[in-house]
Image (cartoon, rainbow, N blue to C red; front, side, top):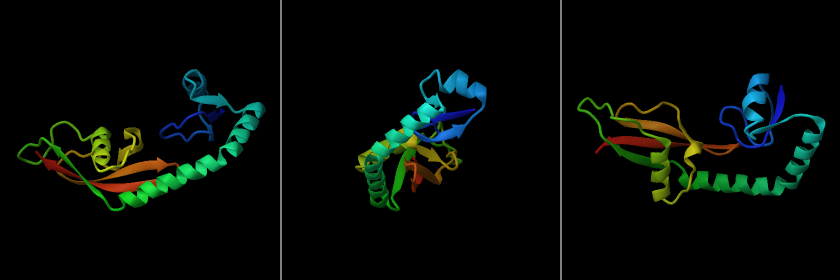
Amino acid sequence: MEIILTQDVTGLGYKNDTVKVKAGYGRNYLIPNGVALIANDSNKRRVSEDIRQAAHKAAKLKQDAEAIASKIGEMSVEIRTKAGETGKIFGAVTSLQISDALKAKGFDVDRKKISFKEQPKELGTYIALLDLHKEVKHNISVNVVAE
């Protein structure tokens, strides 16, 4: 089943993308929740017109994302957490903690746009991926240290 996404869906695509999904997923979840439209001719024409009108706005959003990525650069974020004597942390380091640490340094990145390549389980350095725009991804270093 072909659908047109009306908003970004992690692991599936971005707004206005036409993607193929299983029929049940499209009919029972995406379309009823307003996340997607059926990709028929009229919806495709409407979306292409929306894309054409929003092209300059999209270019500005991409420029802003690139500017944030260049300002962040090779920044390292330090997260303090409780840990045992062996270095294993209690609980988890979440994207919300990374977002708050970036906000303290002057960068407003939505927590939903942050993911880890490897989930932190022990003290050490990890890489977090910032999905700033559909064409702009940026890696930052996250140092997990004991309180």
